[in-house]
Length: 458
Image (cartoon, rainbow, N blue to C red; front, side, top):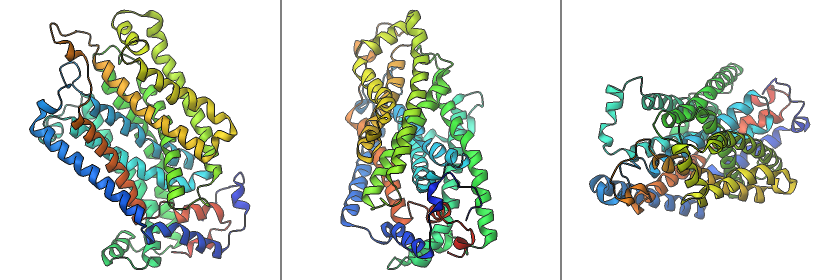
């Protein structure tokens, strides 16, 4: 399909016949065609967790002061905002693994692009849900739209999130149109409503040269737009903290610090997702060891960059050890939060910067195990940004109980957080069950030498 020069991608030199293309199409449509028993059990499990989260949220909204006892004047945000920052960071996976690699012409992105895009859409949606969970009066959400002031960073965040959700959804949908036509023409034994959905949203796709030209031009434009949007959303999120009077957040490094951490988390999340889809859907032919090798190298790069910004973030205030900065840093380095802090440093920065340098660690299983720990460390890193920062205000509250200075999330809060993760996984799982999780035409484009061989397929 493409007239780009792929001479650096050895897969394009392989002979890719129409018969091989049909085999590939059958392989990539198989997860949509057949739902296994364990797949249904997994979906049911996620639905149950989501329902428990809804019930917990109902309890929180009706009996809030009894179930969120640690949310005080000191720690007024809590675990929900940690979760929000985590999901915003994870949503940058689409920018890095799809948009950046597309524009830089790294052809190995092709089987990964749709996985990255659906994770990005799901993550940013659940970031919004986390904000709603944190609000004491969610019915007043419309006040932000009606009475919000443009001077407020919160309004900036709302604008950027809505814009990024819209752009990411469009970037996911437009390249999906040929796949919807493929599903309509080749799937069998599916409900009428599902086939009708494919027909409606394929918008009469016929695979003509003019349609391919418009589609590819649209994707390129959106790819260019989504990169500054993705960077902006996490930068503005960082500004929400940096413009608040807390010692830890008083930093001009915060924007780059947040963005670099998001890219590291995105690569780690992508490794885990690729491994799961590879095993669950038998996609070893398309999600190969080469992809894990590339992702492992990307993990090293992102960990080194993030490590650099962490040094910038902590070295200067640690060198001066003045005032509230000293109290906060001592709390992280040797105090009650030190166990979390050093585990995050080891598993979230040091190990991903070192271990994938060993070729054996870039194999699928060991790299996925490492990436899983990086994702967990990434969540706790956001927890350490939010909670200890709130515990050290510039104007400490006088004569309050000691319990007000400490925060630990309640069972209700953790149930709601667990439900947001289940909801994200449910969105990604259902998407992969209704649409090919690997784009047939994008993979074929990387393999076919002549564009005319593919545009005749619908």
